[in-house]
Image (tube, rainbow, N blue to C red):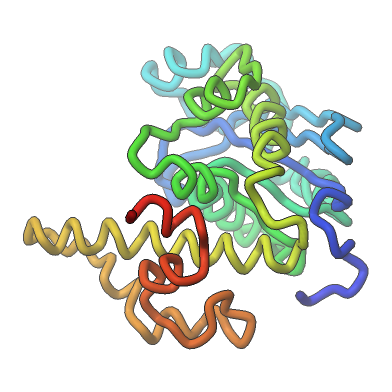
Amino acid sequence: MGQTSWPSQWYDLPLAVFDLETTGTDYESCEIIEIGIVHFLHGEVVKVYNWMVDPECKIPEEIVRITNIRQEDVDGQPKFREIAQSVLEAFSGHGIVAYNIGFDRPFLTHKLEKLGMQWPSDNPTIDPLVFARHLWPNQRNKLGMVAERLNVSLVGAHRACNDAEATGKVLYAMRDKLPPDLENLLIIQAQWDLEYKERYAWRNKFKGEDNGLNSLVSPSSAQTLGPGYFFGNETDPLKSLYHMVPSAQARTT
C-alpha cells in the first residue's frame, strides 16, 4: 500500500476528511474559495481546519447563491499559495476522505502542482460516494440525501467544514456495510467504482452516447488494479460481484 505504518483496520485509521468550495467546476480556470479539513479518529471529530481563500477573482453570483460565500468574505484572506503547505500538513499521517473525490482531488492536485507541490499519493484515499452508489444503486446519492438516509445531521450544506464533517460521519455510519480491513476496503472501492463506470458506459453506449467512458472500463483498465484486484482475473465487475458479493446476488434474484 506504499506505507507500512497504516493500521490494518480502516476504523483505526486517522482520517482527514476534506471539502472544497470553488468558483466553478473547471479546475484549470476556477479557483478555491474555501477549504475545510476535519480530522476524525474512531468516529469522533479530533480537530477542524477551515481556510477562507482569496481567489483573486470575482465569485460568480451562482456560487454566492449556492455557498453563501460573498466577495467580502474572501477579499483579503490568504491566497492558496500562502496556505498550501498547511493543507498538506493537515493531510500528513491520515487517510484522506472526500465525498465525490473525483472533483475535489483533481482540483486540489492542479493547484498544488502549479506551486511545485504534490498530492500525497501514498495516503489511503476513500470516497463514501462510491459506497453509496453501490449500496443504493437506484437512488440519488447526493451527500445530503445519503446523510438523511443514514440519520447523519447536515447543517450548513455547501460550506466546506460542514460538508467535510457530514462526509466523515456518513462513512462511519456505513461501517457495518463495509469490510473492516483497510486494504480490502480500498480494493472493493476500486471494484465498485469500476462497476459504476461500466454500468453507465453501457447505458450511454445503448443510447449511442459513448462520452469516452468505455475507455475507462476496458479489460485493460481493469488490470491496472494490480495483483490485489478483489475478484481475481474476472474483468467484468458485474459478473464478479454476482459471484462473490452476497448483496449483489440478492439484487439479481
